[in-house]
Amino acid sequence: MSRVCVLHTVAALPAVFDPLVRELAPGVRPYHVVDESLLADTITHGPLPRTAARLAAYVQHAEAAGAEAVLVTCSSVGPAAEAARPLVGIPVLRVDEPMAAEAVRTGARIGVLATLSSTLDPTTALIRRQADATGVRVELTASACPGAYEARIAGRTAEHDALIAAEARRLAADHDVLVLAQASMAAAVPDGELSVPVLTSPRSGTAQLRRAL
Image: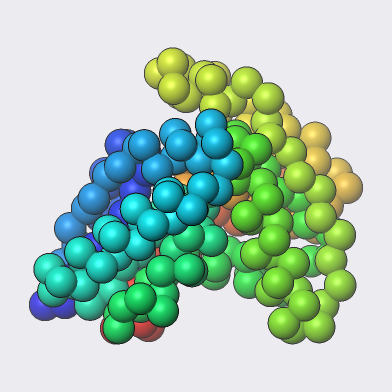
């Protein structure tokens, strides 16, 4: 079996991704690393070089541990994941790359929702890059879903999901597709609830592992 490292910045996410890896990438044996300080530092200080260096160290340690790939599940540190790629000889995957590519294929008016402003810039930049690479012109609207992050860290999951769902309903009328930028948002808007597609990263991001290996 292939060993992969799944690197998280939210403690609840191993329970989300472990069954997805086993379902979508048969023959892959995941081990999970959680460092919430990577996200905390990014929220407080922005994309610091030292944060990128610490993420790169995790990637290098994963290679030394025999991992054949690393999946980084935090969109806020996605650029740091890309920066670590030249340092190792194994794939380093951003969980949100397939979602961004699908958004560009789905429609020109794209709404990007996050609960953290630190996630909006990396995600919108990734979508614009995907659009440029395919010659597609897109219009992006970014929303930080006020209050949702505070509700999640306080343990008020139902309130977190309700705030995201309300913002998604507001944006759906004027957009072709909505993107929930963070893996932790994936359950907030059930499939088929809105009139436009709502894209999330856990399933498509995990499915990359099978192709990468």
